[in-house]
Amino acid sequence: MLLKYLKQLNAYNEKVINYNYCLNNIYWDMETETAFPPKAVEKTSQVIEFLSKEITNLLVSKDTIEMIDYLTENNKSLTPIQKRQVILLNRAYNRASKIPVDLQTKYEGLKIKAQSVWVEAKEKNDYSLFAPYFKELIFYNKKFIKLLEPKVHPYDILLEQGEFGMTVEKLDKFFDVLKKELIPFAKATIEKLESINTDFLFKSIPLERQKAFSNYLARYIGFDLNKGLIKESEHPFCMGIEPNNVRFTTHYYGNNFISSIYSVLHEAGHGIYEQNQDSELEGTMLQGGASMGVHESQSRTFENLFGRNYYFLKGLYPNLQEIFPEIKEVSVEAFYKGVNKPENSLIRIEADELTYSLHIMLRYEIEKMIFEDKIEVDELPKIWNSKMKEYFGLDVPNDSKGILQDVHWAGGMFGYFPSYSLGNAYANQIIEEMKKEIKLDEFLEKGEFGPINYWLREKIHRKGMLLDPDDLIKSICKEELNPYLYINYLKEKFRKIIEMNTDVSN
Ligand SMILES: [Zn+2]
View 1: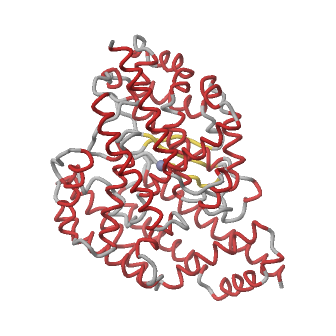
View 2: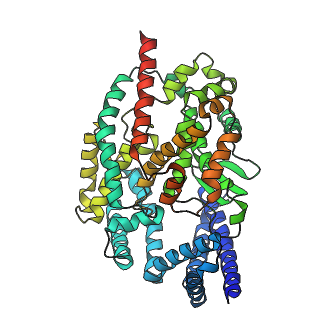
View 3: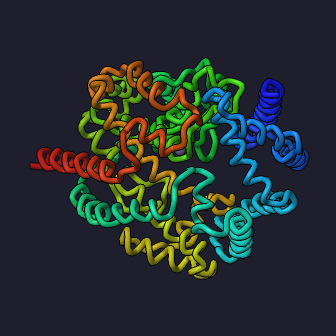
């Protein structure tokens, strides 16, 4: 019997992996500059719907339920990899079986419509266009929550999708610390560093040279271009179709070459995680990231903890100046300060390392109010604007630069934003451990990424989805989520930059 069900598990995996492979190729085509004729949209949507339904039907089928039940009862005879698959299958089944397929299908259709309305609303700067869809998206999510688990905090159910084990209780504590520590520190630091010059970051630089540098940079930090590629899209993203087929995008601006450099570092960070999966996980559903937060910890590590590290930039700088002679006269110290200058800004995706999590905190507070039934959709712009004033001291000039700026809510992604901040915090906890074992700054200065990526692979990447995020972090750091390492890192880093800045100006 065991053998029969293990064979069935393999057959199930093969089907779902192949369906997802097709789906991801379609998504990639739609999102990137690959030729995609407008008239192809309708048929493509049908194919997406068909494949998605096949995956759900397969999961909730009688055969699969029998298999899950048998393997759950007889899990003592399973290997750790098989055991883990059964646990995750149980979770997926629980979710899928409680939400009627029709309801889910209607919701998928609503999301597609809502996203196109959101684009229009943002362009026309008209929140009232999007508000009815926003209400409906929230309505569906509240309904799902009731069907799934009416007893816990409704937001916990949303969190569970991206960050298993995360709860409002833990996040409240996390953001309370950030609020208390980070807001006053950021405010004072921004004032002290106002004099940093960043003009040279906005010089006009031909896109061809920027593109050449992207490939160089991705390879420099250990992204394998034999198992991946880089293209362009409006908003950069990474897609791990499988470890030998990892793709990401960036966006080039003629007069802001830094933007693409940091997008490449961020997305390649995601990509390296996807490429470094253990071959033992091949053919299972365990390839990928432990959670959204852990995935984000890897991208933020490459973008900020490495990419905005003084020693990393010092090592990279001669090559950077060679490709971009426009900054020949700029010292590495001035460059370092320039790419680290903190500012109060309206837009999350343009926010710097110091203020980034405050943007997330604002969104978390609003989402919580929505799902605790404490606010109406029509009031949201007002709440958004007042929080921007409170945390950043900024007046929001219009809703496109306020409540309408992110695509997440239009795409039904509620409870997703916290993973960005968790990523920042996890990244710092993980790097603290790495520094105990290897001389990180020395390797960063020499551009030797072999030992760095080996460490990350052993501790995180190769494990795919074998562990829940909490357990993975505990296995590396011997403790759970801890916001203080993140805050202390920011305080120490920016105190040094203030010192550096004072030395120069005196
Ligand atoms: Zn990311």
